[in-house]
Structures are given as structure tokens and as C-alpha cells.
Length: 461
Image (cartoon, rainbow, N blue to C red):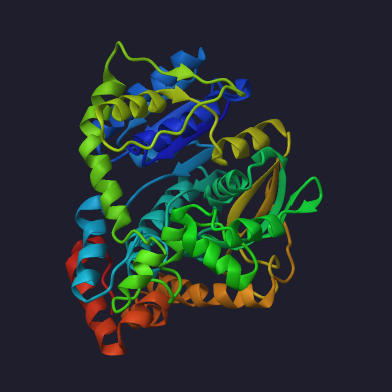
């Protein structure tokens, strides 16, 4: 049975979903699950959750929890990263509040933009430290990397480490599910091919029973039936002809057209949730103590939702009834769309799976830069993770991606060389930042952010 190391296991809800996925496969049910986190309280909660999941599934994995990352990685066959370097406070708050003082508003700030740049600069050194541990303790490990900013992190790992790594994101299957709902068709009847960069990949093919579904999506748009939360993506679809994989709140800060301080009408028209990630984190932190007590209560057990059983999605408005329904949903063990368990299962059993992975562009997409991080379909079996060659993307899609890749390239260069000038240039070339601030304002913003983050960042010269 394999050893699976969870790095950042204190992300309890995410770890819970992955654990439920992995242990629901009989072939993986006796794996060694090694949980690691730097927060002892969250680690203890995650260990309790892991044991409850095993009990609910009636399986007997070996479960261990450790504050020592090297102990967790020693002899691991798979390592799963789910860390947030710098946490919500101070780092994420800094990434929002200081740009706001300079007149720059954001929605998520974890992938691109000035927030994504700063998060990458905090995160890349830590990921490289992890891979150095892996090179020493488990050189043949498969590193399943879930941490944002995905493309920058994976590009740096591809350049700075020999560990076999793949970046995983659920935006492809989630968006397919959302579009299926918009069209009123079952998502498992949709056949698609996606390629591009993480959070800006596009459905090059989107069909049902061999019939192109794009005309039906255009009809949804013409009739105004798209969800209010998805207006940005449908607008991009209208102008570019292909649907993008990441949510509208994310996409709005990857391009220069939607968030403008002198155009509040655009914010209202496209329903853009400024500071959305801050609001989400505050809600999660406020509910954490309640959730922790529920998870740790000996009388509370998880229950398995079998394939085919319908469950409703709960989005609470804060009412007591909705909170109870949300807690009940969190106690469910139901197979998620996350790729991690599918990869481990396919590599262990040899039964092939196709997932979407973020990997280095080594002969995969012709009209994107060599070496950059691309998101493409990958075949997984006992031979490992094998990316699919796509060829050339439609030129206007590649051009749009290039505006993001420019920022990624310079941020990775800054992280690997320690040169401060690359941080300035990355921010200057960022589409949203450049649409709001002039060059001197961007330099001042970068300086303020570097000072505020202090020891969370390496020293740049």
C-alpha cells in the first residue's frame, strides 16, 4: 500500500474531501496517510477527521500526524501540497489592503495581479524547500501540487526541481458542470477538450453526442439566461468565441476590461465581487470554531453518500437552518471531482484515467512559450502522468494567455534569481494593474508590499 503525505493537512475541509476520495477506493483503503501541518490544533482536528472518515467507510488505513515535514515525507509515494504561506493574516490581508490604498481593487488576488505576484514570491521558496526534502527522502515521489498561484508555482518547480510534479485545479470539471446546468443537460454526457494556462484555459471542444454545444451556449447568452455570477465569462465568450475555465470573479482581474475605479457602472453591470476572497476568508474563520467542535465531537460521525444519490448544494445566508444544512453537507463523504485520488488510483492499479494537469510546456502547445506552465489533458497509468500534445491554439486565445504568461515569467524569474527589478516589471506588465496605475505608482505599490510582507519574503536586490 502506498504512503501518501498531506502537506498542509490543517486545511481540514479540503483534506477531508481528498481523504474521502482516496479511501473510498478499496485498492487504496489500507494506505498510510501521513498528515503534516505547522499548526498543532488544526493538525489534531484533521487527524480526528481522517479517523472518522476511515470508520465511516469501514476501512483500515494507517494514519499518522506529525509537525515534522521530513518525517511525513520520508518514504512517501505521493505528496499532496495544500499550504497557504503567510496565511490569511498577515499576508492575504496585506495583499488586499495595501493595493486598495493605492487605488487598486481585487477580487481573489491569488493567481495573477499584484496579489498573485506577492503570493508566488512567498510560496515558491517554500515549495522548493519541500522538493529538496523529497529529493533527499523520497526521490521517486509523485508531487500533486494544489497551491496557487498554480502556473507560477509549477513553472518555478519545473525549473528548480527534479521531482515529478503536476499542478491540480478543479476549474475544468467545475466549469463543465456549471455550463451543463446552464444548458439543462447531464454533465456526464458532455465531451470536451480543454487547453491553455491555469485559470485561462479554454474549451476547444464542447459537445454532446457529437453535437457542438457552443450554439446552445450562445442562445443562453442571447436570451440573458446566464447566471448573474457569470457575466464576465459570458462576455469574454461573446468576444473571443470560446468559453474559459475559471470563474468570473477570478477572470475579471486577469484582464484590463472589467475592474476600473473610474467606471463603477462596470462593477455593477458585470456583478463583480470586489474583495470576495477577503469576505470568504472572514466567513470561514468565523465559522471555524463551530466546525472544529463539530468535527471533534465524539458523537458526530461522517456518513457516506453513494454514487447516484442526489444531494443538494447548500450556500448558506447565515440563518440557523442553513448553517445546520451546511454542517450536514460537510459531514458527507461523497466522491469529489478533485483529480488527486484518480491519479493515485490509476498509478497504483494501472487502470488509466484522464485528468487535466498543469505541467511544463515541453512540446505541448506550439504557440505558447517553451517551458511555461500549461494546462492540458493527461493520461495517467502505471507509467505516471503523460501530458497530451495539443499543437497550436487559436491565435487570439494564445495572445490573451501571453498577457498573463508575461507576468508569470517575470515573477518566476524574480523568485529564482532574487532580483527585485523583475518584481517591478511583472507588476508593470500585469493587465489589471497597468489599467489602473502608472509606472511610478506601480513601483511605489511594489515597494510598500515588499516592506509590509517583511520576513515572509526573501531578500531581493
